[in-house]
Length: 272
Image 1 (cartoon, rainbow, N blue to C red):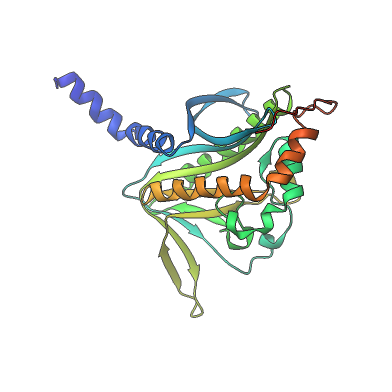
Image 2: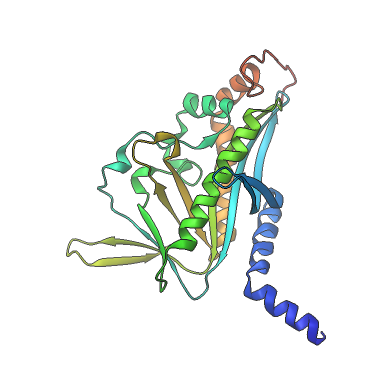
């Protein structure tokens, strides 16, 4: 390796690109399809921004593609752990207004299946009662990185959802925002002595709660690089279980709502 290549390698390592490549490769090895460096339009600035990874997994049923797309931001944070603050008694965690990003036909599937009431699928449709209310990065005076990562993911999921809702593609899609950090992740909460307890976790969930704005209230998952392969295996197992357990509801949507256009009357009889 010459001096120029050594300099390039040092710069690439510093900016976290190898971690992003490793995450994409790991999802691909687990059977997910991958796209990287996807552009979406930020509606606030009217400028295109870049997403790190979209990892998606699904089935084709009656000619309709059912997909779970994990919209992923990768962050290198080996010396600064991320901390999710939790309070199990928060009133806003009881509100029935946290829904996934989903195309119109996926919203129908979500409602018909009542999957949000099934804790077996907490890693896909998080239980809001166990979600945190804030996330910070330790040893930093600013929360900009955590906040900006969350905001970018929410904007991206909403943009992609709207694009598919405007198309005639026969797809039923869920979009799940996911931050993956190269570093440690902790849950933090007060104990009965009003002292902070820390728990090292492989993944956690926090809420993005907007006052009087139900459409923008949702949950975001954060996963650590520690045991990431096991986390992805659990995702895949949950997705396969979803298609098995809710096969009736999936087939009904495939026959009645093959696209997201409001006046589509297409019916396919090609069985999966």
